Length: 304
Length: 246
Image 1: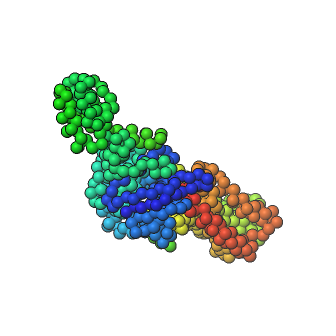
Image 2: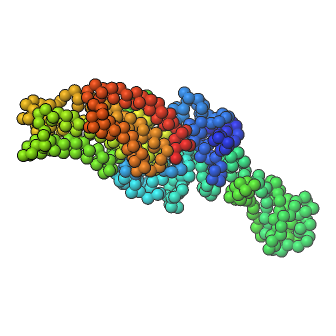
Image 3: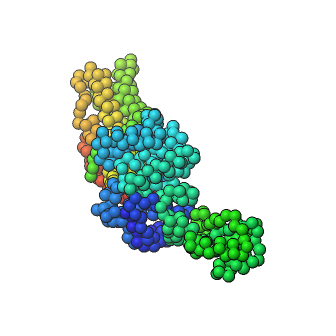
């Protein structure tokens, strides 16, 4: 659904995004991570046809970014939640949405239905006639999400959708995003919240002007730190350590009678390890897999 | 060009203006003052025991001079509105979501121009009708005929929308460099100086703001409007707004 190939954006001598190549499938929730100034917002702006690209190619669906004839078609099929909610504070929640609904040629009845649907879903229906300026940050964020969705876009770009939200509202938004995923909508999510990315994204990319990693959260964790099996024993002795080494495994560390062993395929290799330990007289209490969190991976790559 | 989208932008601005007392005052005060206070001054001058030399011969010159204020008002009022309309959007950061819609830059600019133009022109025209009715009422017995409507005020009301458009276009250009409504308004006000200069020059007899000169002025302002249209259109580009507007 979203494709970029060597997408680059320069502002004068400054390169904001360099040679970005990625592909986002239809119905995928794609997390876009990176520090401030990494080029995330610039990428979204290019993909939303808000700013031009310097070089490279990009497309959304069958439409090409940078092709003048396709720009309006792209904007019609996308929804954008900007980093700053940018609501009209003097207007009511209803009027804010009604205003945007007009640009997508939604008839009056359809607009009414859409507005009611989203305001009810996000818990704002009772406040529909209140000025947006009187809303809390969380309510404003929810209203801005409803605005981005008012025309049922196939592709949704969300820039920090749960920023400023309390935990309950964050969960409402996350669940909402997962519901959208079930409807086969493509979601491009800019976020700093790695926990959030891990929970809702099918794949994530880490950007620091250039793309430095891309994959499922699990793949990224594994690619960086490898996989490790932790075997908790009643007691560790030299015979057990030697037995594990003898069958070709590296013991990374021994802590409080537990062995942390480097493995490449624990689903297949763990049984051999356990057999060797028991044959050496060890008594296994439990076995777990140790991995890095997405945060560990992110920090390692970004600080790289 | 989708006029419905442009109108939606303007209609949204009208809704916001209704909630902004500063915008309402800007639209109402000047046309009402010129429309009501000047006829009252003329009435006082005419019917006061010392009538300050005002008679049927000199009265038209006073009335013509007063009516020039509608031209000045037409240039002033859009400054209050257009600066809020654009700088206000910048402050609220509401331009980016608007730019992400299928609307073209031209449609957004047209909507902003309509909202900056319609209210001031309507206010000036309404004020001028009050002015003409009241002036005719207080001067008919002295002049022996109804002075208004006439070609002079017709020429002024022809230049007025062009002056308002000029004001809106200048505000679009100014707004791209500013983040403060008041500063935008103050800078926008500077451009009324040429109109004030013309008025003062005419009062001191250096320049006659007669029908012919008003029509020439309309032509000049129209040409400047066309030139500034292209400048403001060049300023109001998505990429410019998102990356270069302060």
